[in-house]
Amino acid sequence: MAAGATILDAEGLVLTAAEKVFFRDANPFGFILFARNIESAPQLRALCQELRDAVGRNCLITIDQEGGRVQRLRSPLARDWLAPLDHVMQAGAEAERALYLRYRLIAAELHALGIDSNCAPVADLLTAQTHPFLKNRCYGDSVEQVARLARAVANAHLDGGVLPVLKHIPGHGRATADSHKDLPRVAAPLTELQAQDFAVFQALRDLPLGMTAHLVYQALDSQPATISDTVMGMIRRDIGFDGLIMTDDISMKALAGAPAENAAAARAAGCDLVLYCNAPLEARRAVAEAAGEMDAKGQARAAAALAQRLPPKPLDTEAVEAELTALMSGKVYV
Image (tube, rainbow, N blue to C red; front, top):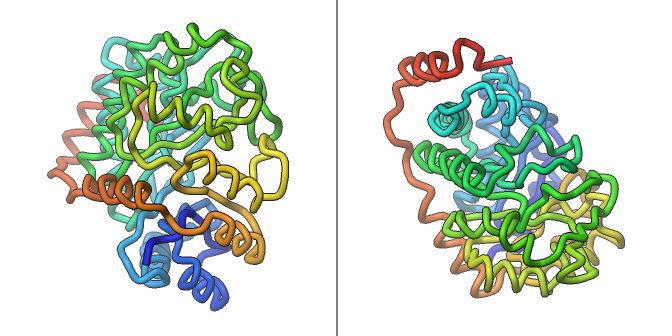
């Protein structure tokens, strides 16, 4: 049986009896973790095993662990990092190596806890208008720099046995609104988008997983990218990204309508997986039903992505920390 075309979350530190039954029946492709799911290392490893036991396979478990404002794991379970843009600016000419080392340590922390995916790199191009919710999560304002640094971040994860999720396809940097609260609209002409925002993702099109942006690109469609078959077609055809694509969280306010409607629309548009978070069990059940099972193309992309989930390469943590501290002139952590 094909996995369900969803990535779902759990309510707390352990699964409830009802969640175990629901996850067994819905069979989501994977899960995402939040701060509310994290108390201690033994507890978190046990929860990851519970999630995998519920679906009867070694499913993907992801998390948002960018560093800075967006990191679910905090001290003492994990290092508290500078915001990515602050890290890049401080590292200067050494930013590529510094980011690789940073995310190699992050990948090691995740892997040790049973987490095998991270929602990074953020490949959105920084602009003068980038909304504050995203600004210091970016890596730079040029196509070459962002593509190069995002590649280093992705490689660090893969070397650490953790699958990176490239976001937010096809580019969130021009958004002047927070898509958690509103629907951003981008009025830039298509030629400009192709030469800049979309070009970053084209340079990273071989990565195994990606996440959509809840933005309207007026040059392409009046619908948000996540539910636009025009934009999704462009991502597959013009950007050339053939990895497994999940939506950003469909409970975000950028999308109108009921979550189940958004799930069905995203699948119809061409998204392989629907990410749905922070909702009651009945709402999760409705979204899982609306999303349905992964189709043959999605299953092939999933298999290709999971094939890159390899054992971590050896890591000398002490040496990596020492090199990173030297590159950063001392200030690495918050």
